[in-house]
Image (cartoon, rainbow over all chains, first blue to last red; front, side, top):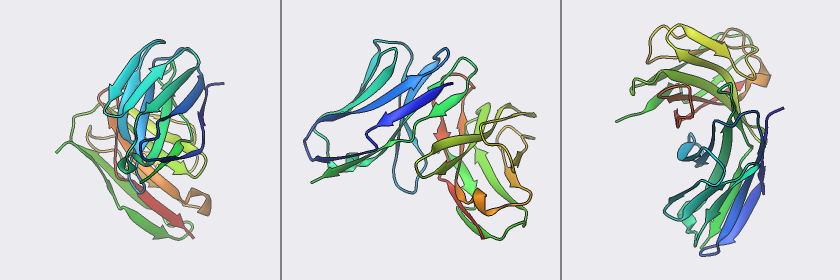
Length: 109
Length: 113
């Protein structure tokens, strides 16, 4: 059965303290892995799509990487405005999207 | 401005009273989808539509109906709401059904008493 697990559930960091969020997945025929950011009371906002193992994408302080079993979202020198819930989703060969429960990231000034 | 709109944003209703949540996108997207989001469970897909007049069940379709008569609109219908349908609902659209980014609406918070 396709499954996506995100860890940790919550992460508290000091401003400037770099870290990584994990998204582990099992899926039949990966079409793509997505990262989204969700602010409280708002809809998810697209960050990245990764298609194959070894691929990396960057945007400002965020960098997403992909292996055959997991993806990491690295955040470098985070700022308070990076506080949000980060969601991971994978799309299988039937175009079905499976979402993780998210990691709530809190950056303290 | 490219966007997905949903109405209403907040709704409190009673068990059994039919309701419709509207969703509209102005990006000429083929694919539209409805999700519900509950604490600790992540986003779960209710229904999706690959194109006009084409809809299909997602993971949790029971108690919901949808229609896609026009490309831009994809309303979610609860014929007889129950308290277990209390949730945060999101409509989303993407260019096509493949590995394309989805654009989400602002959400509708529904409470069924």
